[in-house]
Amino acid sequence: MPGVESPVRADLLITDAELVATVDDARREIAGGWVAVTGGAISGVGGPGDHTPDAVRTIDARGCLVTPGLVNTHHHLYQNLTRAFAPALTGGLFDWLVTLYPLWARLDEEAAYVSAYVGLTELALGGCTTSTDHLYVHPRGAGDLIAAEVAAARDLGMRSHFTRGSMSRSVKDGGLPPDSVVQDDDEILAESERLVAAHHDRTPLAMTRIALAPCSPFSVSTSLMSRTAELAERLDVRLHTHLAETQDENDFCLSQFGRRPVDYLADVGWMSDRVWLAHVVWPSAEEVTRLGAARVGAAHCPSSNMILGSGLSPVAELRVAGAPVGLGVDGSSSADSASLWLEARTAMLQGKLRHGAGSMSARDALEIATRGGAACLGRTGEIGELSVGACGDLVVWPLTGPAFAGALSDPVEAWLRCGPVAALHTVVGGRLVVEDGVPVHSGLDEQLAVHRRVSGAMQSAL
Image (tube, rainbow, N blue to C red; front, side):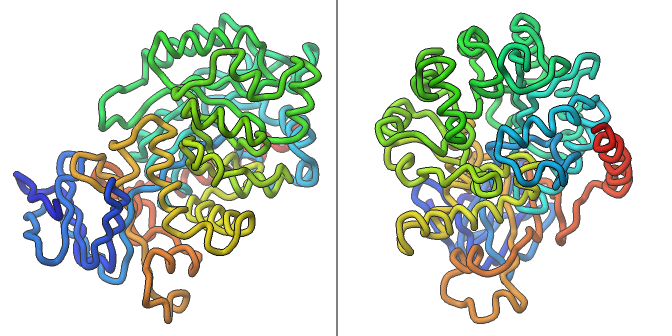
């Protein structure tokens, strides 16, 4: 249906867009379109000929592209405390981790809150409305780090999926992290169940959900992987881990388990549509087919993969095989920037590099950044599209100024080819979190000062 009138006055109405790219089931694009949000959900989408509802607030989107809010499927928010840390800039993944683990061992609740606050604000400025976070470093005596992150997201009004990450194999067990940041399996599982009970909202408009996320095959026990899958099944929550990120990981799994990472994943009960994986750079063609058949999702992290020299993920092949593919900014100690617009553009360029100029369009990248991310998080129809009943999450992108001069024929292609672009307005559940390019919450300056203090103390620990 081209437009649905709100039964009551809308809370927010976005009008007169250059183009509304709905990314709905029909992939409708509406020139001069409008979007209405009521009670946190989209209550109407239409064009110039459709009746618009009355609204408490109206925003003029002339000269702008309106898209669904972008969905970030992989991040480590705490890592912005060690952004661009000089001693870690030239190594691959394993060297990078060994350098940074001693710093991250200083995490506490204050550090978790301020890094989440600053990181989520940065994401909102880049058009993100839903973000995951993978916090797998839990130093002894650090407090409730996940609860601190949840508090930051609630203060900002950001929709978030926090994962209870974990590590159980320290250096003495053949892993990489120090003893001070690992826990035993029973403690990890008990904490995982507690956090789901405390914070996981199962309703369609949920602002906070929890997933379970052992860090990687090389940092947790096989038993923990299997028991976490069983717990996720019992609690009906999602599962996340890093997998097939580097050739070193392939070699590690072969030496430790006699299995490649995807075989290992199947062995521990993770080959299901409850699972989404970070990176997935090095699956074989046969493994791509298996992941697609099982509907295992993939969080594509193009900038991080390039910075760490990990490689180029087979994104097109995964999508053809049936695997949901979303985008991730990854941690701000590897990618060092948390802009989903940048990741979408980089994903488009990588796609063209791998398979030719016509193989990846801006629309493909937008779909990965929205619907693909929603599918990874088990929220198809709830987020990542502008359709009646979906969460009222959207972004108004400016298409004016010198960067867009002459870009007259295709607003979606212009959005990624031109720029760089930051959000003019970012809306979560019908509430602005970025307005006129500025974060709405008033605490940013104060939190940046706290962040500098906490970051400085952490980096002096080496």
